[in-house]
Image 1 (cartoon, rainbow, N blue to C red):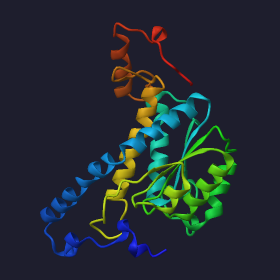
Image 2: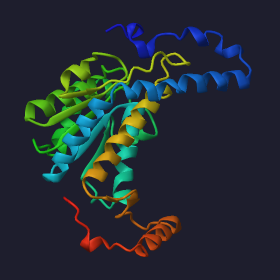
Image 3: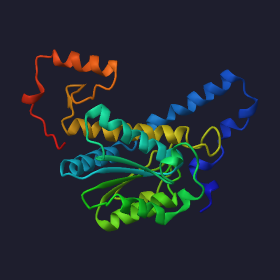
Image 4: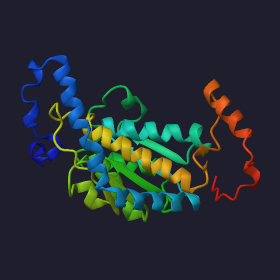
Length: 257
């Protein structure tokens, strides 16, 4: 595939003189481009909602939510997965983040890992993937072999699959049951998809995980009811909720955890 033909990888005409801009001009351009991200996501909200419903169904039935990606996309998936247990009291292992190259790739690039299609499938095999699980593949370009191999393996096994990318009709979108493809356009810094594309992926992940926790009874009104008190801020938050007139044991919640 010609990466230069992908929208996310093309040169942005408004930033051709990026290296000559003043600092204020530069950050103004960054900010102007970042404003396009929510609008791009807005066009994908039906697909995001469909993904939330599928994830909620899988988790309610005892399955797992598995995020999978490489480099920036992989790190974003691991980040979202790591925040779910302390924020919503979900047992570790119910939401999993995989990154091509393993945990070492969180801090340092692992040569060739993202280009290994078989590695994606093997990583899911090591998790003892079952049809009850749901797999969400992330790749800004939409063509990362690691993610593509994982999605095809998961779908062949009978898992529901979701693809998040920033190019329309991408290979991973075509390989998944649900495609979420916010097209945010070329990056200000050519090919640096940790910028607008990464922001879009992060916002979509926030919607998926938070939306699912709401649907699974981890939220009352707009309060987190199972947050773990791992610091003073969270401890204070829990104390304030205990003074509310409602009590968690009598709340009518559908709790799969």
